Length: 92
Image: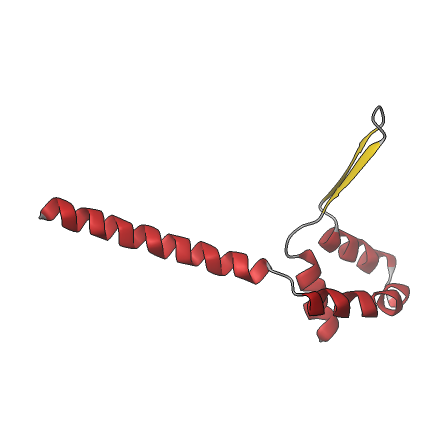
């Protein structure tokens, strides 16, 4: 019985960890409306930004850029919460 209670307790702790991780992932999900709002405001905002602020926006939107010269391939990695942060700031 004690062993079963220990396993139940461990399962409940693990379930709590999974729920917390899920909440964190849900915060990173970007809706179509958020993307549209951020892109609609982008040109006007970009022109009004100082170079340091433009750098910050690029850092929010681009995690890394890769290029394979031999294959001619390029890749851009986007951080999951970058566009969401930008959309929230644009909404303010």
